[in-house]
Image 1 (spheres, rainbow, N blue to C red):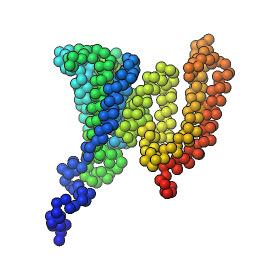
Image 2: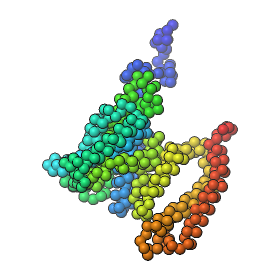
Image 3: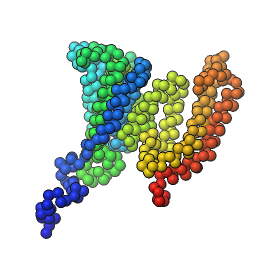
Image 4: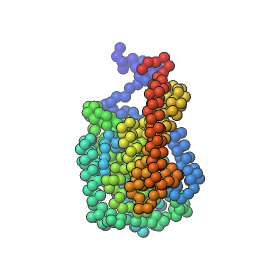
Length: 447
């Protein structure tokens, strides 16, 4: 008896579900194969946190920082659609956010049209502008990945950045383009005069954009983007066009980058050449890689960390960019999975119930290491002040302590702190490694 006849004679429900397979030749079955089920709890927690944050941090400057953080998160997630999911390294992705933002600024200045447009809809215009540019650029840049794509993205970025000072009608030249968000039609009586109103608008788009990008990663196209990233030849052998998969991911990424640009226009009400130059593209690459390109929530962590460095730390020191660069280099060298990868390394430890084994080793190693690194940071600040301070300006403040930078005592103290802290960390590192091996080994297992 054939398998088909056996299947017909079997009673309904007799075949276990795991025996039902998808026919790869059936396009409809292939489209249904992608799971769109999402965990609800993290999204609810994120939404509640976004609602409560202004009540925790009530200062206007804190709300401005949170707005910048949310915009950076959307942009970083959009960039991760290329780098993390599709394996496409772009050195010019800021142009899609920049063009989207510039287009939104022009919509603001179309007084008759903008007066009848609710402000929460404005980021859609930025998304469409970014997507339109991505449709054109992606038609020839996504033919291959790797070095070719990276160089094309760099060339496009430099080209459009150069055009920003030439095509004055659109980019506004060196002065940029400014607008006024309050000219929009009030949204249920809200005119977005205050920063808190803008915060909730950006928070809404953050949740919506992040959710849509997560759903995209669960679609067949999003799944195949991972396959094309890992092995494009095998994906082609299975009947998928690697070029078109990259193209769809590129266009979707351009759309969400444009939304980030539109939110930037709403928040700051001005855009300049700095919003789409190579430096901005480099920053978003740093942010995404710092958070971890292998995880969906990695760019979120990277955006939060970098925004705090750029805003909070920059108020304390002029060398914040130096520390951000050191952190990025350390991440590339020692934690290629980024900050998210560093966190996910501990998931097996918690599943095995052995997290307690790491508490004491962490305190013995990481605490002295942190103190030693703070000592090194103090030395860097001391050298910078000693070399660049104005004549007669000998006093400086490091870690809330004011002292004379030309006195020998601060140098000796900071060198001692750095040397002792890092020395203890180096001495206790082998015991930490031993504890880590024990914590990640199942009971009765061998490594």
